[in-house]
Image (cartoon, rainbow, N blue to C red; front, side, top):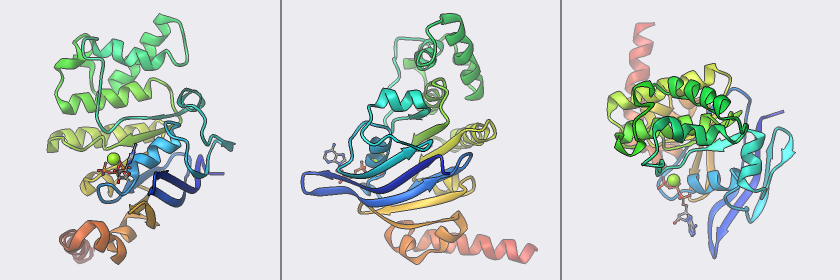
Amino acid sequence: MPLLEVQGLTMKFGSLAANKDVSFTVGEGQIVGLIGPNGSGKTTLFNCVSGMYRPTAGRVTFLGADITGQPMYKIARMGLTRTFQVVRPLSDMTVLENVMVGAYLHCSDSDRAMETAERCIELCFLEEWRDRPAGAMTIGNKKRLEVARALATQPKLILLDESVAGLTSTEVKEMVSVIVKLKEEGKTILMVEHIMEAIMPISDKVVVLSGGVKIAEGPPGEISRNEDVIRAYLGEKYSKRVAMANAETEART
Ligand SMILES: Nc1ncnc2c1ncn2[C@@H]1O[C@H](COP(=O)(O)OP(=O)(O)OP(=O)(O)O)[C@@H](O)[C@H]1O
Ligand SMILES: [Mg+2]
């Protein structure tokens, strides 16, 4: 049984269908990448899965239970949390306090919440920020704080919406290593990302949306070479880069 199953998901805003009959699964322990052009419906899909929107049609199943249209807090309590594309920490509060907010989902005891929060801070390489106000952080650190806050709710499945976007190349590497560490800890990850260098090497599977429709699904190597995906999103330049990298690998082996 997959951890998450999205079946025939459609989300309409008036006459605009931001998601049209989208189906895919996420297996336990996997990293699944969700890619596609701007406005292709990736964030909308996250909003439908995490309970922010009730989809117009279709079904979302998590841990074998139908969670379609359930409120966000209930879905979060079951173990499905998401981060937001636009980060918004509680700026005046310290990093520790921010992360503790997440931890309180499962406990009311402040010592235990602090313990959980400290573990998440460590996992996201934010120890030096523990007692400093979140508002003073760089965007790269804020993005990792967003992940730490989500992690503190002790999810089985984390939806990451563009956690790597807008970061420096060093910060991208830090974030990627956080995501890999989460997987090693047994978390399942569904991530939206535009930076292919970040998402392709670590994804077990990639789902591609274009105009709200799923146009492809498969292992990253296959998706990189898929002509529909290249036409709709990746572009010829990317495809040439991948072909060159493949040729180099072949020449070496
Ligand atoms: N609350 C809303 N009301 C009306 N239209 C919306 C709403 N949210 C999203 N849309 C529209 O739905 C479409 C999909 O938007 P969405 O934000 O899901 O795309 P996205 O793939 O996340 O894009 P990006 O890569 O730019 O973040 C867009 O045309 C957007 O304008
Ligand atoms: Mg988006």
